[in-house]
Amino acid sequence: MNIIRVKNYEEMSLRAAELLLKRLKDPETDVIGLATGGTPKGMYRELIRLSRENNVSFKNVHTVNLDEYVGLAHDDPNSYHTYMARYLFDHIDIPKENTHLPDGTAKDLERECARYEEMIKELREINVQLLGIGENGHIGFNEPGTPFHSRTQVIALAPSTREANARYFNSMDDVPTHAITMGIDTIMDSLEIVLLASGTNKAEALRALVDGDDVTEEVPATVLKNHPNLTVIADDDALSKVTSL
Ligand code: F6R
Image 1 (cartoon, helix red, strand yellow):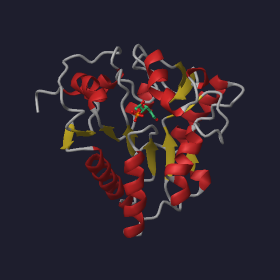
Image 2 (tube, protein in one colour):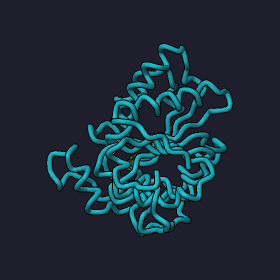
Image 3 (tube, rainbow, N blue to C red):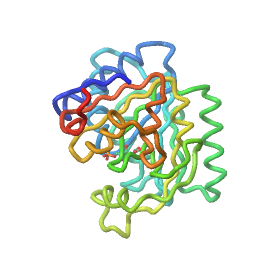
C-alpha cells in the first residue's frame, strides 16, 4: 500500500487529479473507474483544469462508475448520473456513450447488475479505479457484511450511510434505501486502485485499513490490503488515528 499523506482536502484533490492525469496520458489507460460523493468533487475540478491546460483528451477513454441509487431517474438532481454530468462529463470531451453507470431505474435490477458486469468485462479491465470510503468502511456501496466475493449487486444501504447522505436530500424519507454497486471482487479486479479520504469522520475507517491487522467483511475497505497496487491519498485529519506512519 502506497500512502500519500497530504495536509488537507485541496491538496488531496490536486494530488489525485495529477495522478489521474498522468494515467490518462498513457495510451494504455482506456478505462477509468469513478466514484461520487463529497470526496472526489475537488479532484474532478482539478482534473478538468489540468486536462485543459495539458490538452489531454478523454475521447478514447471509457468511464465506469461504482454505483447508482435505485429508483432515482437519471435526471434526478441526486442521481449519480446527474452528479457525473455536473462535476465531470459536461466539462470534458468524453463521448457520452463511453460513460457508464448502473441504471437504478431498471425494471429488472438483477438483470441490470449482470449487464453492468458483462459491460465491464467487454471493456476488458479497469486500469485505474478511484474510490472514496464510507465512515463505516464501505467501498462502493458494499456495506459491512458484504461478502468479499461479490460482483455488481443490489445492496440495502446501511442506516448510517443513509444518514451520511441525507444532507443532499430534502428529508430522510427521500434518501433511497437501495443502490446498485460494483461488488468487492469487481473492484479488486481493477489493475490499480486510488482511494481518497479527507476529514476526521473517515479516521476510524482509515485506521482499520492502514493500521488494523484484520481483513474483515465487517470493514469492507480492509480487503484492499490484499490489492497489489493500492494508493491511498489522505489528509492529516483522515489519518489522525493512524499511528504506524
Ligand atoms: C460513491 C461511493 C461511496 C463514497 C463514500 C464516501 O460513489 O461509492 O463509497 O465514496 O460513501 O462518500 P463521501 O465522499 O461523500 O464522504
